Length: 400
Image: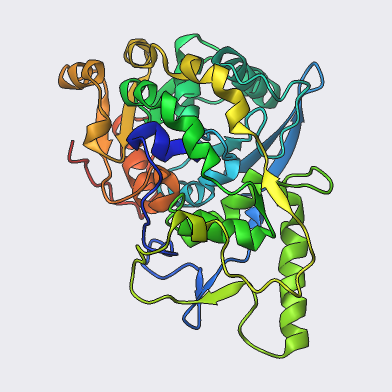
């Protein structure tokens, strides 16, 4: 349940991270988000990270959006958290495919992103896990390669259900990112309060991206620029924000040409320092963008997570036991050691799964530090002989 991650795991609103901390490529060069001392909140196209996007029609009228990268090696099947979309994996997919030979497929799950089903309101664990099984069968059939399931938050819970109940055959690896049964169940009562604290609408995609970074939901501007459009929809036509990305980019470029200035209206000045902890929740809900010349388009959340409350316990109840009982090689990747519950602590001491902690990042680990997550997961894949390394990848062994 990534969009309510701070409530789920820490019982409160997100602390302010460094505003607009840019992502780094493997050479350490800033990959966007800054220009002339100003932050750039312009959305970017998924095409910068993925080879293709496909709409896969399943029996019964359901159509699932998937993003693909690579064509050889094991399949890394990526499941996003609640409120996100498959685009949350964009930077990670780019990094991991440079490290190991693999093919990557990220899914917009039911009720999220550009996926459309006959019942978007059914987010039960059983339905979501069944969706994954039907989707993999439709895309690969008998030619399905060995599969490594990787899920973040709610997606981690669905990955465990998918593996435990056998919805996907040939699962060789199971990787769960920053979701633990004990802390998740303890925080259920505070989720609605967290959701009410978020803004309901945004004036533009830039406005939504800026909120994502300033609120601490994502600490990486580059990740927010590609992923946030998949989390909102246009209130005029009901389409996911991804549909408007290209027109938003074109409008900003046109505005720049007409104004004859180098600074775009979707950028704001730096506010000084690496972190502005004085930014309040209220002010971060209404960023100070100059949008007077932008087309008026209102956006709201793609999915109303508050209406899915009845499904929350089903995502997490019994999760630790199911994870430990699943047969594939397993890894638990956490943003903090405090998230580990008793059952998993015992299982980790018994060597039933590999655990890695990546401190100094938020709950959206794969967005905040996509290169580091890719390194850890690539090392896991190589260690278990699930994927061969590429020539220039030097594997670093985890600390725990």
